Length: 69
Image (cartoon, rainbow, N blue to C red; front, side, top):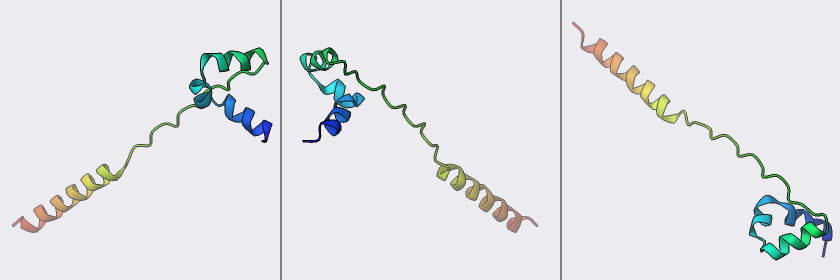
């Protein structure tokens, strides 16, 4: 067993939260503390709806021009 790998896993925020109280207390008695949670990446907005809207507007303009007398 790779103790270093095990320790890194135990310190991860999600793993630490999944430990029972007694397990966390034992690790803390050994001087082991959890790592800070990783910040969530900001959600990226999709440009697909905007692009589709712009294509529709362009199509509407070309259709209106074609119908103009």
